[in-house]
Amino acid sequence: MKSSILSKRLLSGILLLIFVLSAQAAIVAFKFTDPAKEARFQKFGNELRCLVCQNESLADSNAELALDLRRVLYKMIENNATDKQIISFMVNRYGDFILYKPPVEPTTWLLWFGPFVLVILGLIILFRVIRNTRKQADAELTAEEQKQLDSLLKNEKEEPRV
Image (cartoon, rainbow, N blue to C red; front, side, top):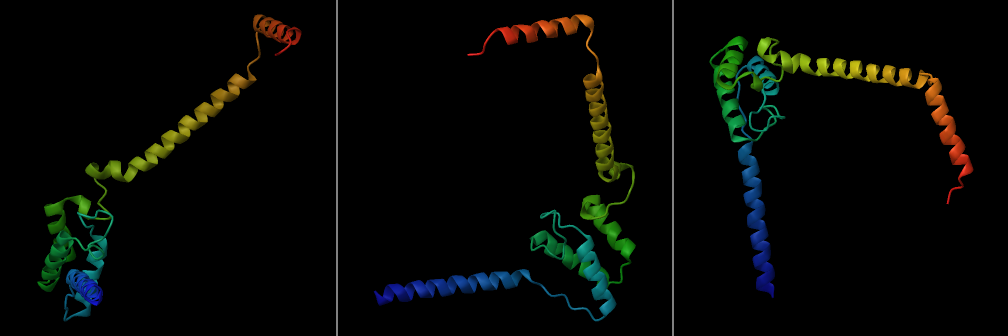
């Protein structure tokens, strides 16, 4: 009985140790000699998207690709690459999708202006439907339609409902 409890505790301890070590492996600290370079690294880490996670920045992601991209970013900053060179490298290699704020150009117009166009189209359709509904509600019955309505109402009053 005691050996069973002891082996369960040992197994739990080993699993906990593996979990803690694997979590620590994902955290890589980059050492900068210049605080300005570290600030640039942080800025780009938050402005560039993880291509695996898609809704996380490079700084927030634990994906292997994000770790590789952070290493590349670190090397480029340490080698005094300009902001333009870093962005150009990332976009040439991974496309505009890597940027949280892609440039406004013909290939991204749908991304930038599509939601506004859809809202405007929705409002136009809504106003037309409302206007047509009001016109139909305000329309008067012709003499023949009025006769049909009166006869239907008269028949309904004469026939009791069951």
